[in-house]
Image 1 (cartoon, rainbow, N blue to C red):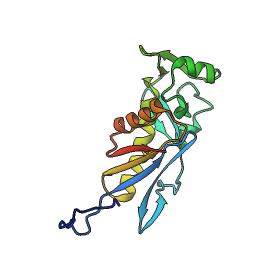
Image 2 (cartoon, one colour):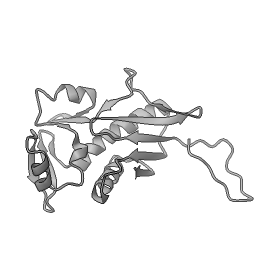
Image 3 (cartoon, rainbow, N blue to C red):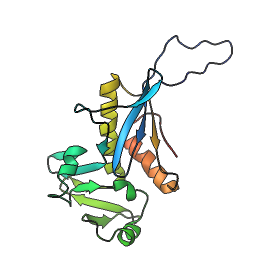
Image 4 (cartoon, one colour):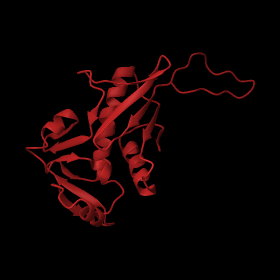
Length: 183
């Protein structure tokens, strides 16, 4: 629930609730939580799992996110994107220098950013992150019973402006409302 603040002399609509959630978009795992009955609690999936592996597998038929995608990493490493958060806001040259053994097939965008070639098409790190955020948003909306009106996404304190902007762009691409990255 979001806090409502009223100007003096105004009264907010009584008991108006707005659905909001916090997302920890992690390098290895992610989760979504919301305040319920005054207590922050992680929102679980149908198998009662709070954690969602930050993994997306792209195929010619679509994509998988989370546990199912992670199970495919050994057999399909080129199309199973793991730890995409490390790629956000970095140039392809920087990625090749920092992570020379990644199994992905890259191409370089016009501005030097990485593009991942997958069976599902060419993806940039922001699109991959957006797919993870969409899965977490769907979990929150299903659990809370409605459309989210606000989302806060955590980012590491060491993230630079490009990485924070990339995370915000991923949230926008995922269709999240009121999303703002916080350290």
